[in-house]
Length: 120
Image 1 (tube, rainbow, N blue to C red):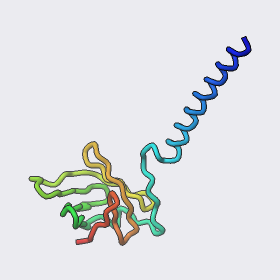
Image 2 (cartoon, rainbow, N blue to C red; image 1 turned 30 degrees about the vertical axis):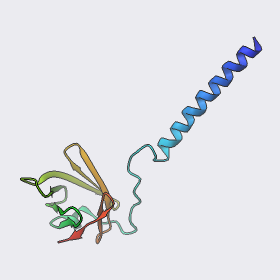
Image 3 (cartoon, rainbow, N blue to C red; image 1 turned 60 degrees about the horizontal axis):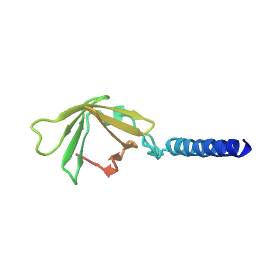
Image 4 (cartoon, rainbow, N blue to C red; image 1 turned 180 degrees about the horizontal axis):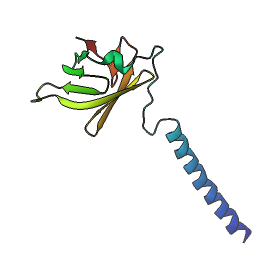
């Protein structure tokens, strides 16, 4: 009986350890989610409103129409893709349909999905 109980406890301990490790992975940010570091100077949505930016590598343009709306124009598209954006503490999220792009904005430099954009 004791041997059987010990094996049962050992199995429970193994399962608990695995669950604990999985939880740690998600909490540490390795399970997805936004792990960008906010810039030292946080830019605002008001500063982006009315500006246009280009990803030189892909020729994609980002037109920030006002404090919440953005048009993204990729080469080959008949018309720009309309979306929304939000800036919180220098971190920016653009929502285009079901896709979210993340980046940073410090009031001078705009980086989306790891690519520095050029102001037009």
